[in-house]
Structures are given as structure tokens and as C-alpha cells.
Image (cartoon, rainbow, N blue to C red; front, side):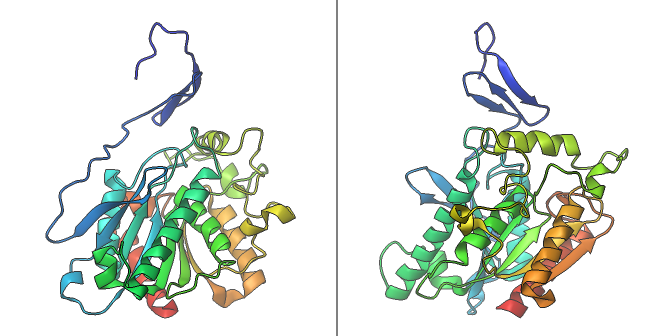
Length: 335
């Protein structure tokens, strides 16, 4: 899209991410194609539409052994990162991430598309996550009743009694919010949300934590200014970083109870990078969960030498493989 010679001006520009113009249009840097790649014989994946009204899609992944394995597989509903404002399930880095997780964890991965900011500020992404989970439930009900509309991969391979919500960075924030919401739902049928897998969730707040205040001179993956800029574009207009969408420990009104930590949550594993500027917020969140639900409720895994987003960006490295091992053990222990 070109705005040269027009009266449209730049409202916000995040270097390497996007430009927001005064007419409301957004131009993203290197926005990925939405074209589906061909199916692989070894690692299967395909795209489906889970919300026709909004045209939202998900990419489904099967592990390579699914065709010869008679054991039904857990289902991971996954939300990608990107500061709420970029990426899709088709983005190459997240596509590769999901291929590896399906193969190593032995689960069906459902990588969810959601509306992006600043065109669709929060809670749009949360509402889309609910829509995805409701679609997953409709699949489980159709299969249990022998009805139409069943996806053949779910029909043949899914164990809907073992559903897990997972996300990294902004996707971790979404998964955590969805976990709160789902705890108050009576799903009926076979589907059970058994756990949360939170990879360095994207939280914030107005008061700086010690890890946010550190002087980082070693080219970290994620810096404080970028975090502040992304929250400014993601939160409802007029809100600051103590809004409960950003700060999970912020006070919450009775009308917002569906998103409250006062509700019960599924068992949780939290993965944290020791060099992540957000680590103190994530650890503080974990301490609250321990006090509220007990130490056995949450497992905390800290990779001291890793930064934000390492499990996605370093998928071939040993630390990322250990994350998959921890997740696999967690799924087996909870399921």
C-alpha cells in the first residue's frame, strides 16, 4: 500500500514491525503469505476455517506417527506470539515451531489465527480464542454423536478429554486469559481442558520491575521500549499498562469476573527465560498462583541463559528441545 502524495500521515511507526496511518490503515513489515503450503508425507498439516463470520483460520498438525498409531492423541490449542500485532499460523517461524511440537510431543496442534492490533484492539484476540475453543468443542460433540461436520483428523486421532491451551509471548497472555474464561464453562460431552502451557507470557504494568529496569547492552531479543509501544497499540484506547489485559495482578471489577484470577484455572506449566525483561512479572504471577491454588498447581521451568521467545526462535537448540520434553511430561502427568 502506498500513501505517497496523499494527505494521509503516519500516526505510529514501530521499526521493523508496522506503520499505522491516519486513515486507520496498517502496513506490516514482511507480512507472511496466507497461502497453504502443500501437505508433507512425513509431517502433516492443513488449514481449516473455525469462524466463518470473521474468516478466521487455524492450521492443524499431526505427528508423523499418527497414521500408524492407534492411541488417540492429546490436543494442544496454540496461540502464536507477535505482540498482538503481527504473525499468523502461516508465518514460517511458527509453522516450523508447530511441526516440531507435533512430532516431538506427539499431539495434535491447532494453531489459531486471531485478529491483530491496532485494527482490532484487545479484547478482540481473547474473543477469537474463545471462538476457537468453542469450535473445538463443537468438533468433539459432533464426533461423540456421530454427526456431520467432523474433521477426519479429529475423528480418527483426537482425545478430547486431554485438551491443553498453549501460547508464547502474546499468545501466552491469550492462553492464560482463555484458561480463566474456560474454568467457568460447563462444556458437556467429552472435552476437558486439562492444562495450560505458558511460554514466557507477555505481561506488563506501569511500575517497573527489577528485570525491566536492567540496563541491557547485549542486544536482547525484547526491549522495554518495544514492549511499551506494543501495549500502547494493543490496549483499549485510553488505557494504561495497569489495565487487567496487560497486568494480570491488576484490580478487577465484578463485571470483569470472567477474566479474574479468582476463578479456578487448569494446572499450569510456566516456561521463563532468565534473561527476559518480563521474567519478574512472570515469576510474580507464578507466586500468586502458588498462594491461591497450592505449589502443586504450577510447575515453573526457568532457562537462565535464555531470552524472550527462545523456544520459537531457537527451535533447533537444546533449550527448546528441553521445553518440548517438559511439556510432554506435563501432558502425560495431567492427562
